[in-house]
Length: 425
Ligand code: FAD
Image (cartoon, rainbow, N blue to C red):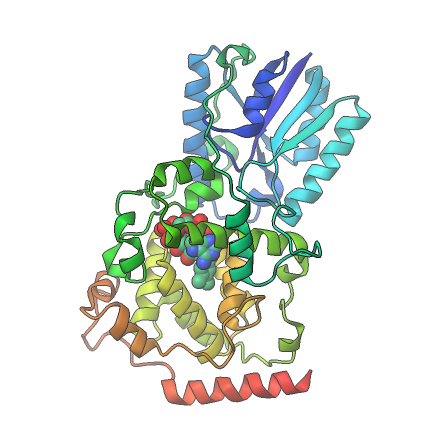
């Protein structure tokens, strides 16, 4: 009989809750990762996130080999893979860290049922967050939908948490498996790489985080997404508590609990009253936005940064998203889907929450009549044009396009469209 630890969004050996629990059980632990066909089938063969996951898995496999064990990497529909595993091994328990996305919850429920029928158990732990879906609730037991009181309660409930090392490295199963190449799972290496995270400039965070050319943010997002570092390890490394930075980590958990309690946001406006807004959804306009050819330098620089690196600075994400929804009157779901394809840190809850925020349809969204002026934003946040010039080589030449829509006209059109839409519902 063995225990199995199933890696998902927690690609690390250190401070991994469920892994430590598995290792503390009496049975030997087999570590497994499953490349999920349902997810992979949607991706291009050079998807940067798959390359990143593959790299991380290889490092984990190497570490496990030091302990005389290895990582079993499989590919298929998770439910089918588990059926096969149940035939190959006598599995007493499967340990996982909880994943809160709708797709993952359904997957886990089905697998839990399969395991129960086979006489094994499925044990899950909170790991990805400090406070999970039902930890931070209003006095009446309902979820918060506004950030500031959520944050207040989050902080009130916060108790310092110490990261843990590996609880018992002698308890890994001594099974050695071949590690698959990227090609053998149907992918090839992407030219885009995930940048290492960097917490060294956070002393300047409060002052400079909104300036894309300062480049002082942490670059933690893909690491948090795939769990190559735990949120507890980050908070421990922060040392002196930087409340502004901590707030961003709280935003992450805020949107996670919104998605958990209101899964309809995946396909619907959080605020139903915006359902009457009639989008123009012009395909040519959308293409210009995607390619960074709108003629608005801040928007174009951001989109080109995204296309080339899989990353975009947060302030610029806000500007590009606002521009798509308000200036071009394109459904936020189109922009959300484009970001989902390109972002290394793509995370359903954060992406959806922030897109709905930009569109004005979200839970704690900016009011619809707050429309970013992309020219003013440029003057304020990239006044020396450093960021813009970094990403638009032809900036300042005749090759750079003129603005695709005039700001004042677009602003007025957006205000009218939203107003009419709101009145219609
Ligand atoms: P830092 O400023 O160093 O922040 C530290 C961490 O806090 C981030 O890594 C992230 O985990 C969290 N965080 C920061 N801001 C937010 C926020 N507004 N909402 C939720 N969490 C936040 N973030 C994603 O992780 N995945 C996404 O798919 C995503 N899509 C976005 C779409 C739009 C339209 C906008 C406006 C923002 C989006 N964000 C998303 C939030 C934010 O832009 C990124 O988390 C941030 O830019 C990542 O860079 P960083 O790690 O250097 O951030």
